[in-house]
Image (cartoon, rainbow over all chains, first blue to last red; front, side, top):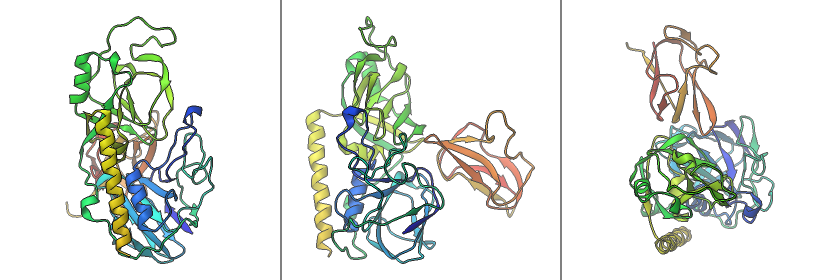
Length: 326
Length: 80
């Protein structure tokens, strides 16, 4: 068991997500940075899809009440066991009574705690992910609170040696400036050419309204092409007839502040979405934080798919290297 | 000046000195605080996190305005 001494903020149980209900309006939830989440699970020998803890900005303080194998991956919230610094991206052993805590976030935004066996919470619609807006999944459908007790599950398939590491070439480096790749569309035709170019040139600032639902950015206002209001669309120039919103799509309500819709977002609606973050870079937007800068770089769908293949090849190299260290 | 303690924000967000717009400030400059006393709140991701003093002393000054957007590690106040 793992006891929550201090909850941090927005620490939730997450896995690969609740897939298959998007058309019903149910977003997938799941780990925001799937790269760090997946690598963490491999470092503790879990089968894919085991549930981990995702903590944002401020980590929790946790007391292990049994011996456990753990790994910490993702954004740099410097972890400590019993007050002593421990490494990230490495298989660690903790003993019953050990306390895991975190220093102030240095780089990135979200850290993942993987535990051999996974976090054992009930599966809801095929997933252990927390969707706090509806209060389902994860630990009682909510972020952790002081005094909660988490149980360790049986999702471990291999023993991984203490000290197994991810080679530094694969460890992402996060800075305060982020280039996030997007595929322009679905409703980018509504922007003036000048505004679309501006959207891609602007250095956007992440506002305090940035969480698992979406990230709101401050920068420049955009202009829409004048049009006659189509039947079924709202009256604002940023309205279109309702459409499905892909995860990672960026809408600009009223043309004022773009919002990137993420894992817990609404699945459709009537705002223009001007671009969609590539699946590879969803991992990186998850590691940006309030006050940091983001530039959106336009790529073609083919480039995005190539990038995804390269990303998958890196993931399998990491998996192989973990196996080779056993 | 020795023994001056800085109160640092553990997270980025919007800093508030009042629990709500209609209420009084948690503490004012020149006021005495004990460890655990709330000196402000930071709003981020639609969550509010209390910032507490870790020491006993007198709040000599606030270094950020209420409703200002602050960064992680930014000094909020000084306590003598």
